[in-house]
Length: 188
Image (tube, helix red, strand yellow):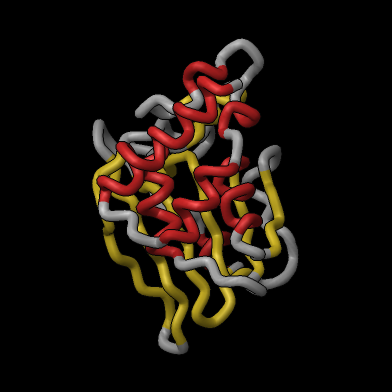
């Protein structure tokens, strides 16, 4: 276990902090959460690597760097309500920040009732689904990687009184969630 604790500290110091993640709350949360608990048994050695780690068939944890940057952009605050879609490690990090978290990891198309201040997804999608955007409260933020090719873009969506705005944050390459790939075809 001591080796994993050292690996966890090294992950924060060499992958997260060096990627301009300056929110010390995130550093503290990622230092105490045992990321190896979110990967299959016997694969704990992958938990702190600079890779996306498969935790269930077709489901991956984001690279620590990418998750840190995405959560920093989302700015989860104590007392807010969050939705974690295919994001078990992100959910745990956000909960450590005293945010109420609802988890969805089975039927990703079903968004629970009620509005959310923060929505985070650790898998990529071709484009943020309308149902996810509709679930945002006024001032709510969605963080997701949109990918339709070899490299995706981590995106931040924010609901305002005028609608929903989108901003690309950084390049990322997590696998696309099953059922969320782009549907290419011919138009007549």
